[in-house]
Image (cartoon, rainbow, N blue to C red):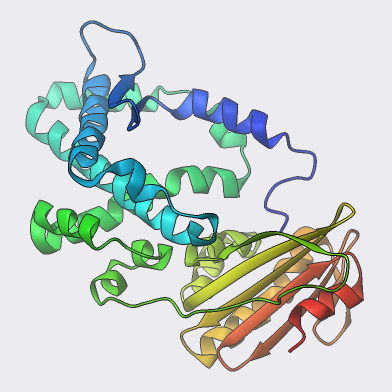
Length: 313
């Protein structure tokens, strides 16, 4: 999907990114929390981070955090939604604690500390990596604020008992409150003989935003806004990769908007050209796409026949 450069050392980037950005952590398996700095007299920023991590400890005591977020790979979008609830609740509580327990001068010091944090690795990371890291904290906090405004902390406790099931719920709290479910969607079962499935799972609204980000964040959000359900599957054959995406939208108009965006998206990062209706070729793979009613599907493969097989039927 060209979300990261082919030559990126992803493991090293993530290691560097976490070392730069993670200021505290709670480990449910050990029931221990850690905050960086080693100060015997914590600064305002460290105290607010402690409030965040203590919130995780309280969540764990009441809702079993490890079990709460431990979902199978095929429920990855639901897992991200749950993580966003966990981090959003802790981020909101951290902010409320700071407003209540820090003086105005200390709050100013906290902001100075926060602005002084080195973000060189984060700033240089691919957009998809940076946004995936921030999503549970930024969009998660916005989700938590929406629930808090509806019913205070009791509404957040209720959300742990009735968790959001999609990132659409996080991005649109009103849809969570309305109980809007995802539509079941299934991709192709196989591209053909010789292929081994290596991945299959839900593809959420946030994923769709990331995929179409080369069109610009606003346009990507507009395309993803009509998301109703999705699935991604991938296969390997002697080092070749085939990937299929199937999406359901809230309406045929939403699907048409996404369908029109696919060739624009693929042409942008892949420098691709059209070779016929619904088929494009780039320097490393082929893309085929189909649109019908409120459904959209596209497939990527090493040759035209494989790409077409992924969206046939």
